[in-house]
Amino acid sequence: MRSAPICIFLIGVLPLFSCTSVLNNLPGVYKIPIQQGNIIDQNMIDQIRPNMTERQVLYILGSPMMTDAFHQKHWDYLYSNQPSGEDRQQKKISILFDENDLVSGIQGDFKPSSEEVTKPSDESTVDVPKRDIELTMWQKIKSLFGFDIIDDVASKPADSGSQFKKQL
Image (cartoon, rainbow, N blue to C red; front, side, top):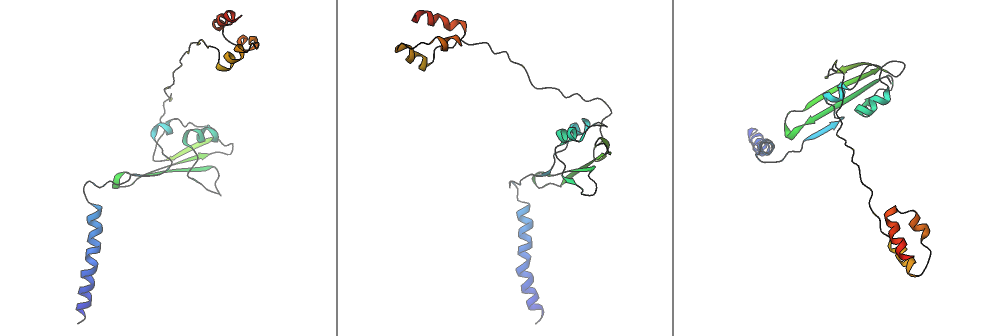
C-alpha cells in the first residue's frame, strides 16, 4: 500500500526533471551570451605601468567593480562571460595603490608585459576645401526690396563678391 503513493509521486515528478534536461539540450535553440562586470583584456593590462595615477587607471580600465571600504587603495575588476550556454569564464584583476595614489602592484589572471606599449591610432586627418557660398534666401529677399546687404556679403568669401557687384 505504501509503495503506491511513492510510485505515483515518482511517475509525476520524473517527467518534470527530464523536461528541463531535454529543453536545455535542444539543437538550434538560441542561448543568450551573458557578460557581467568590467570587460578586461590583455591589451588593457599591458597599458598599466607602475606609478600611474588613479585617474589614468580609471581611463584605461574604467571604474572598479568592487572597492573595499576598509582598503581604498585596492581596486578589484571582475569579468564573467558565459557564451551561449557554455562553461562560465571568469577573470579577475586587482590593482594596488600606494599612499600617494600611484600604482604599486597588479594581481590576478593577467600579467602585464615588460615591453613598452604603443597603441596604434585609427584616426586620420582630412583637409576640407572651402566652398563657395551663395547668398542665402534671406539675403536675396532683402536685396529685392533694396535693403543694404553689404554687411551680409562682407562676411562671405571673396568669390561671392562677384554676385554683390552684379547687384550694385
